[in-house]
Image 1: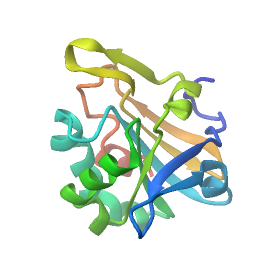
Image 2 (image 1 turned 30 degrees about the vertical axis):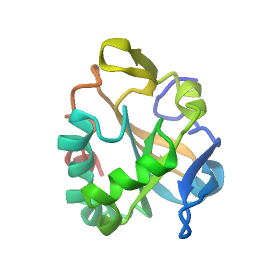
Image 3 (image 1 turned 90 degrees about the vertical axis):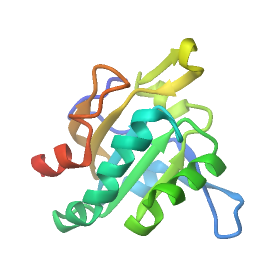
Image 4 (image 1 turned 90 degrees about the horizontal axis):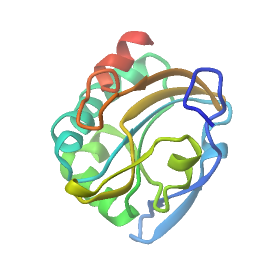
Length: 163
């Protein structure tokens, strides 16, 4: 499956942390049905560009995105849910109302053809950096970075401009 406008976003199972700190399964298909959602995917929690640019751009713009009719802003990463949750808390994602979803085994990422490996950086089976707008399960906008270290077309500000 390609990451392109008109495609259906995968309805796989991902994880989040529940109120008790335990992993909770989330069915993406159910989360996307009948809703307008922004999903931004990134290589990993606590990594350079993800921490200094990508997540902060969505913390800054989450309210404005909701003001444009977005029902939910989701961060998706190939990490375990515990790490992703701690990182989101540290960077203010909780306060901004950003949902942190772990594609722990990388299944959704692989189905989209967005997986990559960069051994010199210690990154294996990670997600390329992108943002999508998904309306009722269908991708209506894609901002995919040509390089995982870049954050321009996938930033919160960039997606805000197209809504």
